Length: 228
Image 1 (spheres, rainbow, N blue to C red):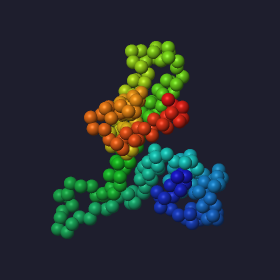
Image 2 (cartoon, rainbow, N blue to C red):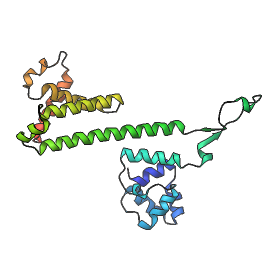
Image 3 (cartoon, rainbow, N blue to C red):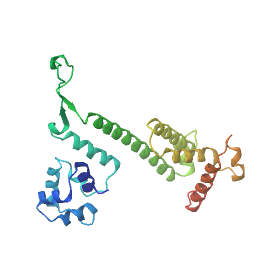
Image 4 (cartoon, rainbow, N blue to C red):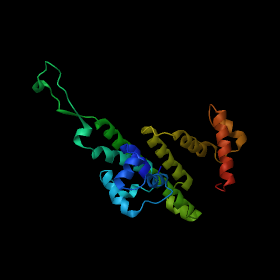
């Protein structure tokens, strides 16, 4: 999603409201939201001000999940005190001095804590992915002799599989969505790669027909694209 569209959605502002603040026609905003026209640079500082000082770098880019989390965090942290906190009403017959509570309740405290937790988790996952990608790129650039020097007593493939298994454990720890596919790929390279397809049934105690079909299609895909 284009940044400006997401930011408008998060801040609950429509095209008409933005157009009025910029003193331009609403169709201009529509083209910016769709990404069909660039936002003139003179409007970027004004948009940044409208959205409480958010960086103008977000407005025209295709957002990543990390970008979306940062935008949502920024919205909460820059809210007016009255918008973020709900006054606590003391029940009838209760002395306020007897209550061990603040005068105001932060309606967004739990959401903000969740967003920060999700952001930190995502950044760690991305870091892990980048390290594995770098390792694979390193492998591609080395001949067999240099691979032995680089990875010493283990083969390069074994080294990468170890990293992938560590990565998978990490994803499972944080309950990251979509790990089943990665788990299947790691299992394929651990148990099925290099083994004749006729012997695949003997690789696991309880072979799964659906899983074996996936492994077969996956191997054909690797061969088709010259990966193996």
